[in-house]
Length: 255
Image (cartoon, rainbow, N blue to C red):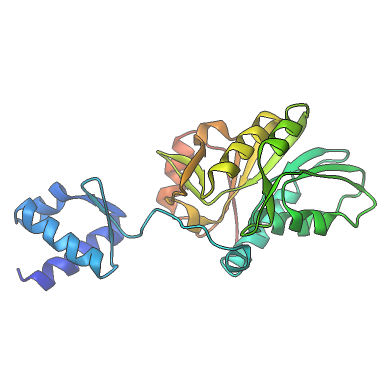
């Protein structure tokens, strides 16, 4: 088997299994582990896969911080559908926390409260959307402004939440991973998200399917710490089953 043939088979195997170990590939291709590692290094340099702890996966699981303008262009239909479903979970006279990000911003656009609604918001963009409604009692958290997300972070915001008791937190994340949990790219945001979770009876995570298997810089919590995960129908069946096998209350919306 030529090097090109090995490379093609490695990619085909990854597309079928999503992740594969060096030892598995060595047995499959009947070559040494050293040869496989060289093949993987070359394929990684060509950006065709990503190596991690003796395994190969199809994509780099680590997410870099991007501006809210960049993120808004990604998976817009999925975010809109997720936001619409999340809005159906808000009840009359509810008291909710809305975190930051483009998916929760899509959720805010879908909110049409018929009765009184109390909202605590970390996002200036969310507050701009909801601030004009006479049915919304809006509290904007104060703190240090993150220009990339147009949201606040810091101890002032965390301290404010210590005295709050809300029914639900609607939380956007940069990645969700079965083994690692939910993540974000900013450690200050992770601290604030944890304070939000403590101040809420339920945590509802809004994340489009492209974020499955991805990791931000810092962990917010384990998946077991959340109550509902809303994602879209582009999530692979294998991933959906794996999440449900972990006991996650998974809500999948059609796109």
